[in-house]
Amino acid sequence: MAEPSARLRLRVVPGASEDALVGRHGDAWKVRVAAPPERGAANRAVVELLARTLVVSPASVAVVSGHGARDKTIGVRGLAAAEAERRLRAAERKDRRP
Image (cartoon, rainbow, N blue to C red; front, side, top):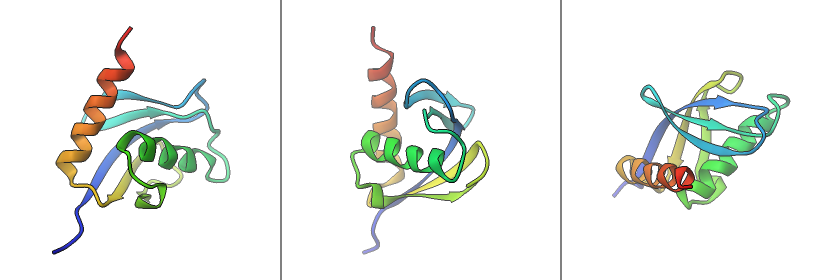
């Protein structure tokens, strides 16, 4: 049986005050990372943020497209798309609590 995997669309805002999952941005997820958009720093920060949020290894998360753009496609190995969406929604609700 094939390993589950997910593809996520993101809108990334680099240079923010902190790393955070903001919420939905159309059909993508909006994330903010403190790292600047230089030499792949923001991409590495996105991978780390998603790995923590989705509770997977950073090695399971990769930028598939949009390496130099704000709009990115991220691949996640070992996690089905429905479960990835559920975990992102749960993290979004948790971040919005007062």
